[in-house]
Image 1 (cartoon, rainbow, N blue to C red):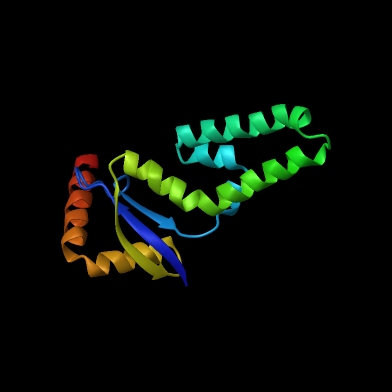
Image 2 (cartoon, helix red, strand yellow; image 1 turned 30 degrees about the vertical axis):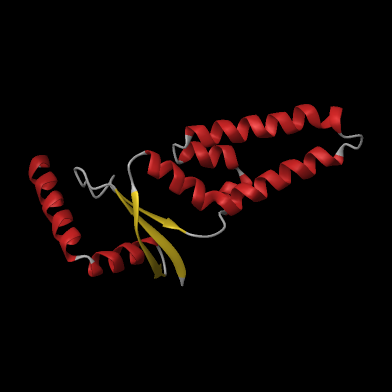
Length: 140
């Protein structure tokens, strides 16, 4: 089982946009392609910081270090740090958008985590069902 955090933005409660389930732990996509990962999750400031950080390391590396391997090691260390801090970076970005962490759930996957959370919070499940029925009525 993995650990997931549930983040809510209560105003307007649209189940597609106002509930986010995040897997806690190391993120391989953030480690391998940090800037693209940040852009995918619409974390513009994080993507800019990663882009500038890697650029500074690659640009100043040959000037500061005598061997050509040191800048590569620093870029790898930056990638490792991003992979380790990916969850925290996503939480920070969500908090800037008005989300609050509402629960920590152990589950098999994100759908299971959301299902377990909604089973614990009957009021929220009822609110989501109402919002879904309103949006389905508006589509017909």
